[in-house]
Image (cartoon, rainbow, N blue to C red; front, side, top):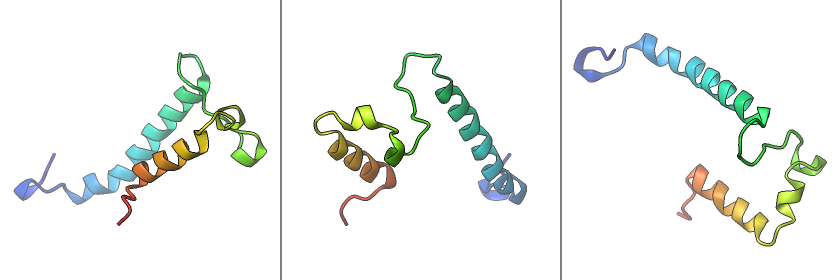
Length: 77
């Protein structure tokens, strides 16, 4: 619950990294289980063959590059 003036309390801010780690862990466990109709997450690094089949598709490397630019917020400034 927010403290005075709608600002989060210090204890709430300290809890954020733990909650983020737990949510990320839960998502990755679910995503790596492969029990749903979504592209699988490779368990190997790219240089060890992970994403190999996807990266062989025409334009895949450019698409991945553009996706990371969008995710990381690099808008060319």
